Image (tube, rainbow, N blue to C red; front, side):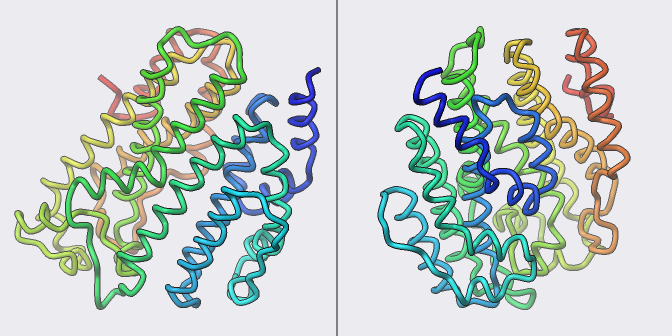
Amino acid sequence: MTLENANHHRVASEPLLKDLLRDVSRSFYLTLRILPEPVRPQIGLAYLLARATDTIADTGAVPVEQRIAALGDLRRRILAPTMERIEWPELRAHQSSPAERTLLERINEALALLFQFAPPDRELIQRVLSIISEGQELDLLRFGRASRENIAALNSDEELHDYTYRVAGCVGEFWTRICVAHLRPKPGVETEILLERGIRFGRGLQLVNILRDIPEDLANGRCYLPWPALRIIGLEPTDLLNPANEPKLRPVYNEWLKSAEGHLATAWQYVLELPRSWWRVRLACAWPVLIGFRTLDLLKTGNVLNPDTRLKVSRREIKSILWRSIVRYPSERAWARLPGVVSDSGIG
C-alpha cells in the first residue's frame, strides 16, 4: 500500500465522513456507502463541504450580505491552508436541523481533512467546491431579497444553462475525474467524452429538480424558468403562483421537459459506458437517473404549479427501482433497458 492509499484509508475511517454524512443526508449516505473505497472519502468530503455551503446560502434568517461573506470566507479556506479557524455563531444559531448545526460547528475538522489528501485529489475537490460556492453566491445576489410578493426570475436560457452547470454539472465532471483517476480498468470511451456526458448528467438532474420544485421556489421568490420564455406565452413569474395557469405554461414547460429527458438519456449512456466491473459506481449513478426518468413521468401529467400536490417519486417506487437495478445487473441487455422498465418515457 502506498502512502497516498494509506492516507485515503485513514481519511475514510473518520467519523466525520460517516456519522455526520449520514445525519445531513440519508439518501446520499446510501450512495456513498456503495461507492468503492478508493473514491469514497474524496466524494464524501466534497459532498460534506458542499452541503455546508448550501446550508450557509439557505439560512434566510441571516442577512444576505453576511451569508455571501461567509461563503467567501469558506471558499478561501478551502483553496488555501491556514491555521485560522472559522466561527459562525449566528449562522449556527439559526439552524433548525441539529445535523446542519453540527456540520457548521465542525467545519474546521472538515477543512483539516481536505488537506490530508494528495494534491491531485485535493485540487479536484477544491475546484468543484469553488464553482459550487460561486454559483451559490450568484444565486444569493439574484434572489437574496426576493419573496413571494417580489419574485425574481432568470433572464435567459444561458443563465439557466450556467446555473445548472455551477450547482450540478460540475459535480458530474468532478465525479468522473475522481473515478477515472482511481479505478481500474479505464472506461473504453475517451475521458473527454465521458466528462462531457458527466456534465450533462448533473445538468439533467438539476433541471428535473427545477421543473419539479416550481411551487416551492416561487414561495421563496425564486423563478428558475427564464422570464423571456414565459413572456412569449403571455405569463409573468407571478402568474405561476396560480395553478389555473398551468395549461398556458404547459407548451413551453414541455420543451424544458424534453431538454431534461435528453440530458438523462445522455446520463444513462454515461452509465452504460462505465466498465461493468465498476458495479458499485454504476449502481450509484443509475439510481438518480432512473428516479429522474420516473419523476419526468409524473411531471408530464400532473399540475406542476399546484403546491398542494407535490409531484415526487414515492419511497415505495424508489425501493422498487433500486431492487430492479440490482436484480437485472447480471444481464447487460436487461440492465440497458431499465429506463424503459421504470419509466413510461424510455430513452428512445
